[in-house]
Structures are given as structure tokens and as C-alpha cells.
Length: 115
Image 1 (tube, rainbow, N blue to C red):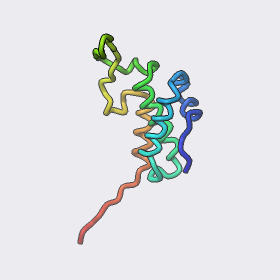
Image 2: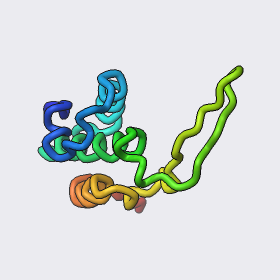
Image 3: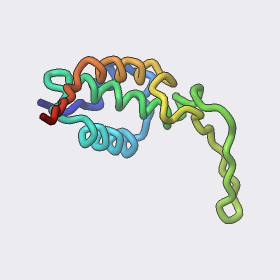
Image 4: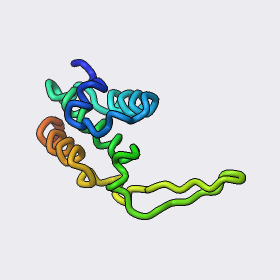
């Protein structure tokens, strides 16, 4: 199965168009490692929605899911950024909800019975 692409992610999440190439590449590499053949013919779709979920959480366009402000001091400069409260929840983005639905339908689990 083929891995997803930036073009496919942007088809479902056009608001992520201004995300840096470096961040997009990093997330696409991560999801290709995380989601493999256990998704069968839905592998690329699952990667697409998971990538959009992650990018929405970390991109400036996705900051609406953040709650609270985190501030750090780096030398003489202060840096403030939004930190999403529900990093572990797929419900924090519409893409995460779709990914979770695909995951529940696609992943086959093995059951071992001992005699």
C-alpha cells in the first residue's frame, strides 16, 4: 500500500496549506511509521486523517483546539504558545474522529485461546 501525501492531506484539510514543509514532512514520516499494512486497503486513508489530526493540533491554523497558554523564557526572549489540552484524545479534531472510526473498523486483532 502507498503512503499518504501532502496533496491528499490538503484535499481534506485545505486550512493546513500554510504549514511549513519541514513540519508536514515530519508528520507524514511519523504516520507512515505508525500506520502500516494492518489497515489493509484503508492504510493511506488512515494515514491521511491521522496526519491532518496531528497537523491541526500543532499548526497555527489549528490553535483553536488549544486551551491555556504556555510561556517559556529562552535567554532574553519570552515565547508563548497555545497547548492543546487533549493531545491524547482523537475527539479534539474532526480528523481525529474520522481516524478513530477508521481504526476501529480496520484493525484486525488476534485472539489466542489456550487449551
